[in-house]
Length: 121
Image (cartoon, rainbow, N blue to C red):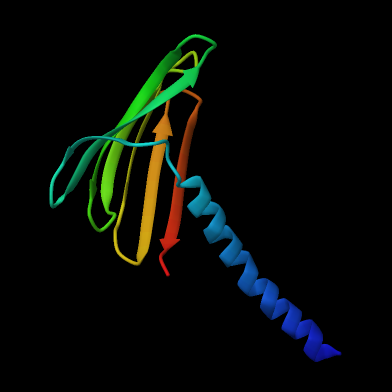
């Protein structure tokens, strides 16, 4: 009986970090990126923050970034959908295990950080 409790604790100890990594990976998914310039080293892109209405699209800021072929890159952006514009900056490493981090702030009360790990298999 004690072995089953230890096995369950060991399994939950493994599932929690795995679940957190999957959640962070899901949060890291960005808006569609529109490439501006692409070459054999990577691309420069814009990811607009748009919302649709019945007859048109409203732009509420955008993110501009550089992404290399291995997945590493940097970005900066502005979101004007709130009363105070929010600015963001971040980056990520490339390869099979990629780490990403970013920060955002409106200069007053709204500020945050995000970090994630992406594992390719």
